[in-house]
Image (cartoon, rainbow, N blue to C red; front, side, top):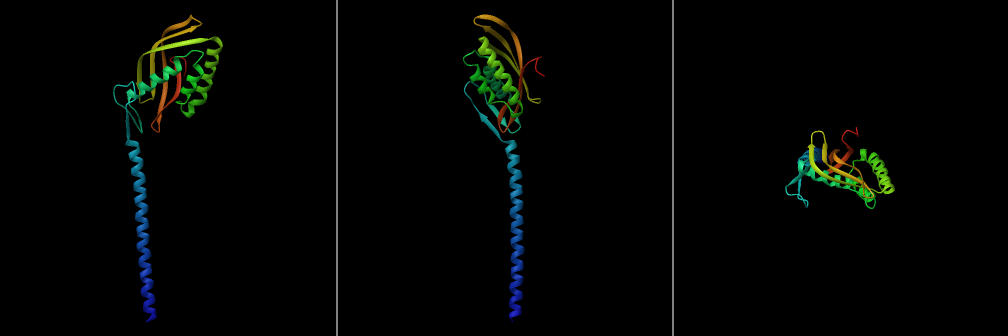
Length: 187
């Protein structure tokens, strides 16, 4: 009799183990499906923001940003990078560096700090009035065309219509500038 009881308990333990294994596999499959769905949803998620100074909606998604957002950010960056005088150049360039991507940061830092040294040494002031901003989202390039005026202690150094190129990317819902250069003088 004890053998029958033992075999019955042994069969019950085996059945219970099979049932537990099935539940573990089901939970594992549910985790994999949940992970895939979460990653898929993160790519489709859109953030709609209305920053001050912008009349319409701007959107940032996992794959890019709307043209209006890119234009607004390029306007902000061109203000930091192209409007300066000796008292604020270094601080503005440091703020602009926060928006550069890691692969373009070192080159941008070198270029901007050399420019800040020249601005402070020669007392150069620059004013840029953006006129047209064109955005090519497929290539991640924005061009800003406008009137630029550079002076040194009140004397005109240079003025005219200039175009600057911003190569950008959107990573982790954040706008990052890869490169910035005047058109015809950067690549």
